[in-house]
Length: 134
Image 1 (cartoon, rainbow, N blue to C red):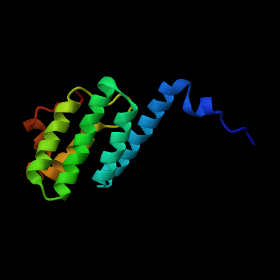
Image 2 (image 1 turned 90 degrees about the horizontal axis):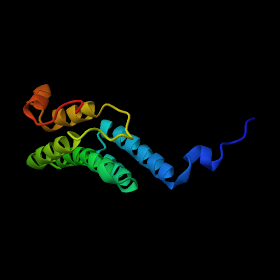
Image 3 (image 1 turned 30 degrees about the vertical axis):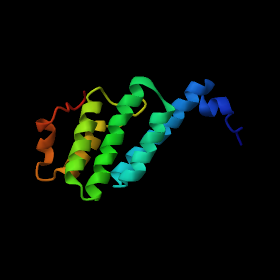
């Protein structure tokens, strides 16, 4: 039986590394919740990730928070609010995906676009300032 990893091996070295791992875990949990339609839980997960990091990374994470907020607004019957949140998400995510997150953010945006604007379908991305892969 092998020895369990030390705290340094598990969390990395220094408080910055711990904060990054904490943020990465919250980001991935948020993605999982968003895909399940658990928008409020995704929103909360991404807020924890945003609090764990700072600077431009936090601003990009804010785009994901707006994406989850669009889902929450939609479920609450606030179509206009959902569209506003989606626009804010697109604007924030134009700056790029969070570096700590290794998932297809474009697919998450499309998922929420199809929820919020089903009649527009896949053409919604072409009508917006959001540029996939940007």
